[in-house]
Structure formats: C-alpha cells, structure tokens
Amino acid sequence: MEDKKKFGFVKIILLMSIFLGIVSGVLTICPFIGELIFWLLITVAAVVVILFMTRLRLIDIMTVRQSVVIGAIIGFVSFLAFSFVYIPAVIALAKFANYISNPGVTIFLSHSSVGLLIMLAIFMGVLSATLNAFSGFLTFYLIEFSKSLNLNKNNDFGQFNELNIRK
Image 1 (cartoon, helix red, strand yellow):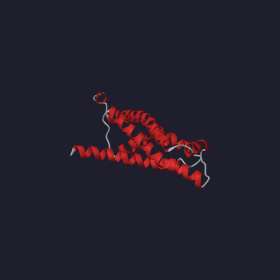
Image 2 (cartoon, rainbow, N blue to C red):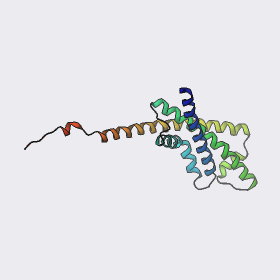
Image 3 (tube, helix red, strand yellow):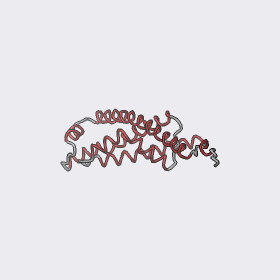
C-alpha cells in the first residue's frame, strides 16, 4: 500500500512538471515574455509546483533531502517537456512561417543536428534540475519557517497569562 502511495505522489509531481514545461514551451515563443518565462522555468519551477501541491495538501515534505530530490525531478522533467515543445515549434515557425522570436536561438536550433539538440536539452535539463533542487530546498526552508511563525503566533505565552495582579 505504501509503494502505491509513493508512486501516486511521484506521478502527480511528474504530471504537474510536464504541464508546467509544456505551458512554458508555448509561452516562450512569445517575443516579449519568452526570456522571462525561460528563466523562471530554469530557476523557480520547483517553487511553483511545491507550493501548489502544499496548498492543496497533496504533499508534506518532511526532510531537506526530499525537498532537494523533488526540486531536481521537477526541474529536469519540466525542462525536457519544455524542450519537446519549444524546439520543434521554433524550427517549424522559422521554416514555414518565417517567424523568428529570438534570432540567435532560432538560427542555432534550425541549423543543428538532432544529436546536438538532444544533448543540449539533456544538459540544460541537468542545469535546471540543479537550480530547481536549490529552489526546492529554499521553498522547504521557507515553509518550515512559516510553520514555526504560525506556531509562535498561536502560542498564548502562558507565562504572561499566569500573572495575577491583585489590588
């Protein structure tokens, strides 16, 4: 039973990462917001997914190691999904519609071999995994810090309530 629960947990993370990567791949084609979306995907995809799943109470991260591993999985999978959408879309738009959102990237992607594109996608996926692992760690730390603040706020500080001042 516990194995099925863990697999469901990973399955949800993978599906949300793939969805985030696909949406980012489509939005990155837009000329003005494309670079911002690209950098947000590489650096804070784990933050978005972890906070969303924590708010819905789908996950409860207990250790730093879990947060780092989950962040790395989110970063790698979301960037691979991004690459599978973005690279063919940029090549198709450049060849058939003469649309170039980012000239340097479009020329590089249009004239590269398939092997080079796969190697680039995997390398950037590993880079995204590394940065998102750190972002996952920071998210875990901030969630735990927030929980400790809520515990202190809810604490009635009993030592001050014990004061009986009699006149």
